[in-house]
Length: 296
Image 1 (cartoon, helix red, strand yellow):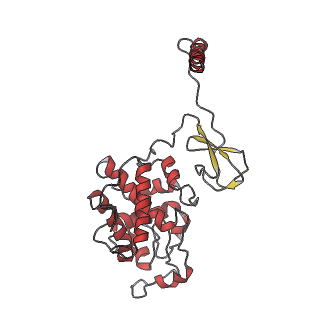
Image 2 (spheres, helix red, strand yellow):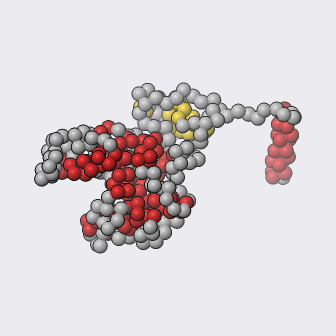
Image 3 (cartoon, one colour):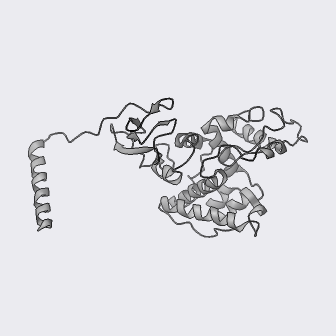
């Protein structure tokens, strides 16, 4: 009986809607957008803001925490007919903003989705090479390793400050113009050493040798340094992480390119497994399979 009543009421509602609208009548428009989110504004609990075509309501006092973080903002749905971040970003990145936020629910606001998509132009082959499965697997692999290096996109700089003075190789002809302790790990893959800042800066057209602090100040530059390493550096491995994913070598080879024997070949199996577990979780979010050769 309950089922019949529900169906009857639904039919009445549908007929009523047709009568109200009539032939050629306009359908309901999207919700109006609240005032755009401002990183310098304070939002108390219940206050709304719009961001990337959606309305968001603060769950409590917040400032400079990008809408999309489920622990801070409540999603009120699409507004103004704008782009739904549940769909792929207009930049063409295969990971949507909604998926990115799901991967990193507690990320530092510094690591913005826009910063990442703004950085993609530096390496156009990244996540745009091969089949859709390969493209999604590369995105998941990059983000899984980034997750491991930064504690879930929480840390912008290396936490052990005792290491800071060790990353200056004075045998390089250009030395360490920013200071002995200026080349510590920064960004999504924790760029470190003066020679890496020099090489990354030269490749990206940014003077990182003299101003390495840009990597912890500018989200797009931070992401670009991570993409630089991923796409161009073998590290302690035999190929770039990009090549490992697009040529079928597998996720395990990306770990080798980042940390080599420190983790691979029995160096630290727990750390390797941690990376693998996150990679599997991220491929699941992207709706694909992890493939083979996951370990190193």
